[in-house]
Length: 252
Image (tube, rainbow, N blue to C red):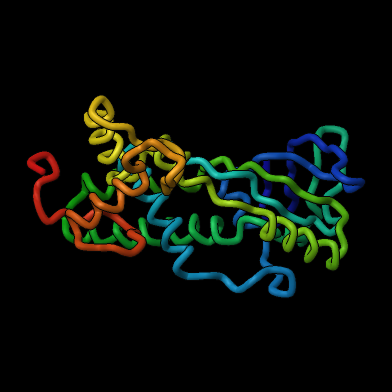
């Protein structure tokens, strides 16, 4: 698919979106990392905390043997991609400029660096089995198939507008959806388990984060999760990161 430093060949399909030509494709992260840049005049400043959050999500998924998913990254080719008889080519020496996906991409790179550091430490202390496992994690991140939308001929002004529109109109998943379907957060899974046992006794709101006088439910999943976190950790604000149990969850 690619010959880094000479010519990058890309397979994909093109279509028009609001009068702009867009290439839809997919590349392994290791290939993508070598051919894109961040234009600081278009992008916002990288948030290190956000990068850490996504990096930990990636590594935790690897360690738990779970798949992880991301929405398509958005790039601008600035006229550097041309169509050929058997696909598309990125002009040698040219780069793609990221519009949406900067933090996810930085997190992939950070995850690789973090895993390499852990692997070296394991090798130096004789934990060779652990080093082998960490190498498989590194390869999985490098080979991760990144779905992409590449706008072929945007101006810098249009890139800024696209970046603004994407980030202004984006909405996080509703708390009800998170509580019903999230399979990664241990407190959320614990809340669903407790709720299933209590559901025959009283009504629990499954979708809304709060209940009102017009709602017959006694409490909500979101409220129950906050109570469980307060029970185990004494935290009343937003909980981030892995659980820190002060007692055995099964005994509780």
